[in-house]
Length: 357
Ligand code: SF4
Image 1 (cartoon, rainbow, N blue to C red):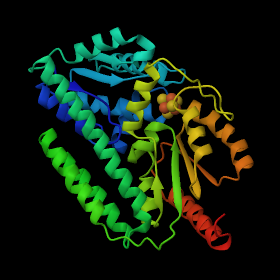
Image 2: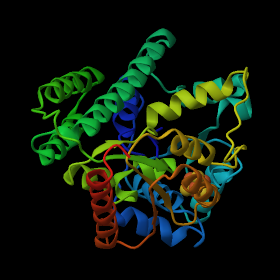
Image 3: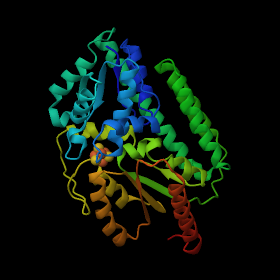
Image 4: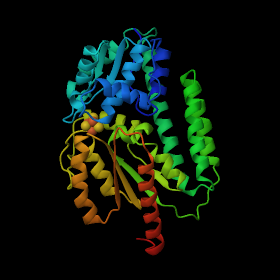
């Protein structure tokens, strides 16, 4: 059976290479685009969040390319994501895109035994031994971590680069090379070249760039099309960017959540998990040492709306400078760019007028 999965950032690279090395035929949906959004919107309930519509569009496009089985992670959490997969399956079935579904809900929600059973089902068509499959999966996870770590380093250095636009070109080239990789080995080689290029990037440590934390809803944070390439915009403006939420963070968080909790940590500003990663967003904001924070969310995201309300008291108490951006289904990006430019400009002036503050 040809397997597919919806996009989120660069996940499709390790995911498709893992499937390829396991000998499982796979269909990668066309790159995320406004066309995918339109296809998703056409069948989704209007009030659903942006990630849902984009992912639904990905799966419709993959179905048209011959996909027969969907492999998807879920969380069974209290936000829309809790019923995400089930709802998406029903909508696609009813709209004439019926496929076989394997929902990898979080082990905490369905238990480790059930999680392993579903994972086993996902790999039942594999053409390699169980041991080899474990090795391939582990290498795929390491590849994702390496991609995230290298990109993270580049984004932090962008503010110190002699030519910040060079960082954008490097990032684009790296992703192109990853797309062209025919095996996990090729992708690791591309990651090694990129790491080397990041180390050799001419830097000026005397610069004092504006440092920005990007936090908020996970899909919008990771997926460029959902945030109108916010990181590139910031890098182009000479900022040093940190975005802690990435796929590696999500994997670590999911594993940790499945383990028994020794110390229950309850943040003062948002003590309970209300779905998505709203609680973590607020914690990141509380800990942030950056000059400014850009908190992002897609239109229709319930947990992040609550986080936005909680962040107001945090901003007041700690004097944080926060720009809230809500990304909707409109295609115009100029409005966002203007707001980001004005925010960075304000942070720069503050640094000059109140150094060290
Ligand atoms: S966290 Fe927000 S955007 Fe993500 S699934 Fe839940 S409601 Fe949708």
